Image (cartoon, rainbow, N blue to C red; front, side):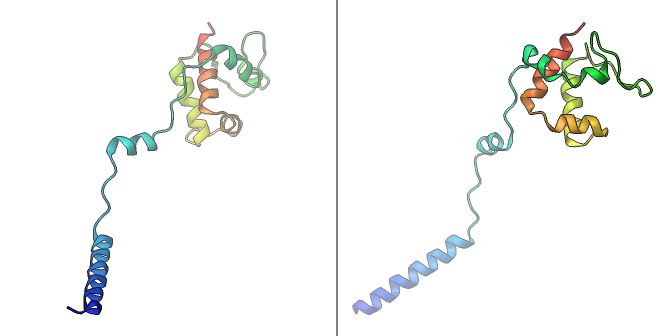
Length: 127
């Protein structure tokens, strides 16, 4: 065979394999790697001491120990002593807009996952 024919044959072979590779589906990613990348990191256990400092704005409306409700004509639920799970879920729902209340949504949007865990740890410890 002539050198030019060999080079042309190799070029056609390379083009054919490149086209085949583009038509093949990409290999699936490992399920564990995909799940780990998609799941956000869970917050660590709540720190009640830090949570107490984060609840300073909550006290005026929710009437925590020693405070009087700032809006006596509007029913504001008692949050001290509530379940930690309930408090985490409620704040997360306000943050995403699933629960509607302008003030609570604004407050919750400013909290990180760890802030919510800390707040829930503190509020659930109040008896």
